[in-house]
Length: 640
Image (tube, rainbow, N blue to C red; front, side, top):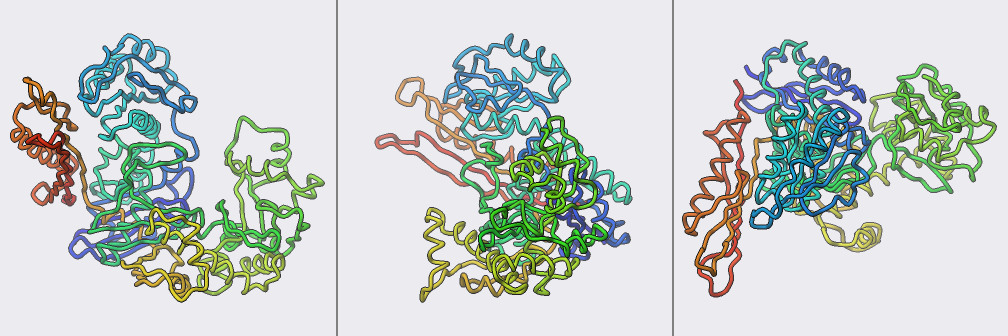
């Protein structure tokens, strides 16, 4: 027998599954808490929980992770130098510590706009090569002619041994600034991707697993580990992509909407004809606009571990994630007694950080820039949780919420609090951790909004369901104002939303929400077997997908020197006959797809290539003045 191992290193849990390659069935699965920032312990624990006899027959390992997304959001990437070539400037140049702009670039037809100032590039490299881990290069209209990027890359590689990332290698889309951002972020992630892959390799070697290693990208496709290491930026949002692919696979639905309730967020996405629906624009993450094609999704900061708090008798959820009370009670001896002693602050003092159920733990990480007020609070914290009241007695006042926010953002402290996971424990719908801690917390918070323990938890559950329903309808009703959708969901009308595709639920406790969701919209709701490890299944179920575009543009058509320009990932070509240009483009597209599949370890004999053609015609002209051919190749990994 031959098996495959899927690993998803998420924000809260690391999931693993073993699948039988002969029939695609899930044979074993396991979950472990993710250990961040060092993921190795979490991955080891997740793999350790699987049957060792099954692991011996694993021949393919595929992984997905939130590591790239978290790195960008937290701004913890490695230092990179960015070189922009051409007459344009980065609007967010202040975000780049090492940045320069030099003369060069091309026109829309690929003709040289200005000669490349290679000497300026060499001077910049000499100034920065000892300060950075990589270089990123983006040239104006490099998708029409990448020669200046390639020339710059060659010059940099002669001056130092650092990696060089070019914009045209990552995207064919127009938008030089976005390509610059993409190249810059990709260069930042190169060492981090290498560390993550080394971690995975060390774990599978320790288990004596001799297997090919692949990775899921943010468009739902899998790539060879060599490709993943070159383009780690394409792993942003691979977690939600894994959810979508895994849900579709487990539910056996090629068309479906997916609601994935994770620890940190709830994500909604859509599968059409067996392929993930992608964004028309590039992915946006942490304020950066990129040219990375990712799955289209609706995301909200409301997951199983999102903080539930009360102010002015109103219940709020989020946006921050905390350690649930029920988890903390298992992790810290004596914590339940601390929760029992919880005193309720005055109503005027209440806020997200000042709650009778809010506790704080000091992290081991250190920060160079700590203010006097921050230092004063940190001195009162240790390895065991302290309550907001402990801080009050230590400071003789309640701590500033802004200072606590700063300590959280600097990762100097982590928080414990009541969460939707706690609410489900109280309602006896999820029993993974310590229910007593959840019950005490629900009682304390319920008093603040004049509800008993059960009423409070049912209300929290209703808020989570409402958020899930609103996210789904906002995704499906694109272009409709979200406030109008809210009116319909909240209103008492003789009608409701009808969803014409199955809705698949993923996440550990999602079965608890099925009945409430049926009150919000009418749909076939599917809760597939192994839904709790759907991400790890998605890491395995992804296909090898390669998308490229080739454009044919009439150049000088109305002149005697009629020529057709062909723009492709291979560069720019000129052909004088339109039919010959079309034939050349069709053959080139197929060649690029098959070449990619072969290099990435996919079966080239079983590649399905779909081609769509879009023409722009002008009245009186016998041939299109512009033709765009889009190639989508789908293959399967070769498993030896």
